[in-house]
Amino acid sequence: METRMRALAVLVEPDPARKAAAATQLRADFLAGAPLDTVARLTPTPPLPGRPARPALKQALQVPSRSPFTVEGRAALIHAICHIEFNAINLGLDAVWRFPGMPRDFYADWLQVAAEEALHFSLLHEHLQTLGHRYGDFDAHDGLWTMAERTRDDVLARMALVPRTLEARGLDATPPLQAKFRKAGDERAVAILDIILRDEIGHVEIGNRWYRHLCLERGMDPVASYPALVDRYQAPRLRPPFNFEARSAAGFSEAELDYLRS
Image 1: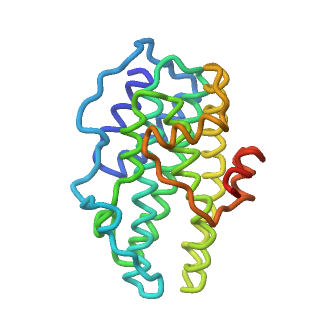
Image 2: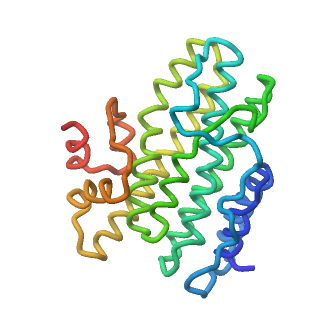
């Protein structure tokens, strides 16, 4: 089975541990020279993505916020991050199978993202189990995958609104989360978030790079085009505080950072 078809097969896998392991192996095989599919468009096997029966998925406002200063609250917060990383594995795989005709480096980048998100999920799930819980024990929301569905027909919109919008919010949110975990005495959570922040800077940079590549191909201005894409696809509005240092490292231009400052 060729790479993009295998990515689709991993995407529909419902078991998180098997999905994480398979995503990691898929990237290794691709780096070793596994071929890309020649078919332009693959036929998905519904439903997408494969996921376990739990957690139950709710609207974001229906998922209660939790304090990290109790074991149960800390577990719920780590579970929420774990769910984001599970969805992020799916997003990386979806970019690989869904969008044909891109350069080989595009698929290498998104297989890297899927494999690194698999590592993040595994680290968080391991830590969650030390707190007496497993993935699926708390309700979750599905905002990341909702935007993936909205942008399923345009790779430029996907690059604009998933990695460089929704995932970039993780760059902003991680340092305050780390401060909470540190205050609660959970240094393992802080250390895992260090790994996640490092890797997510790279993931957002991948989104920025391919967004600009596609804008150049289509004769679009990346800065001027972005607000129109936000409106068209009903993406969340960005709100401060922003992690300007991490966003700069992830490849946002000064013009884009000035847009956030305004």
